[in-house]
Image (cartoon, rainbow, N blue to C red):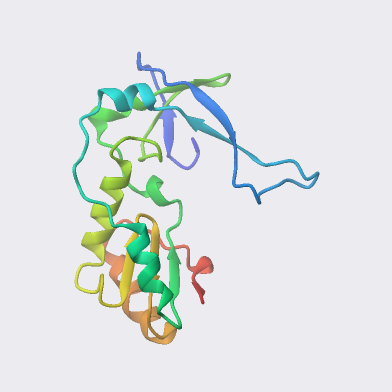
Length: 174
């Protein structure tokens, strides 16, 4: 993460705790043990943060709409939230410590109180004009219900003028 510019060394007085949690249930290592993920626990920071009132889509409505679609394509965003830069004035608040040093985030992490609203607002802006008609967006999951050959040039081109990278190897069809 340091080499990728997602975090940087920090002298901040803020220090969120780290937690080790299991990855998805189906995710195991070669020995069959669950893979683990280290996360920064932002609960204390979130308690001090004024909430963003941006309305997130209802996931049940999205799933209902997809249930009637014969074909759809899913777009996966490479590194999801980490594509959004943190405001310089807020980076110090995301500080955490490891045995290797004290760091803060340059890019928005999952777990901040307003991260979901910020990400959804950006995706709504990028996909404005096609969202709802043939494109459904829920945070970093984008579903396009149309022939893949048509959208491969159409929808993916919407991402060329914004700082969001698609993981093109993970575009899949139903």
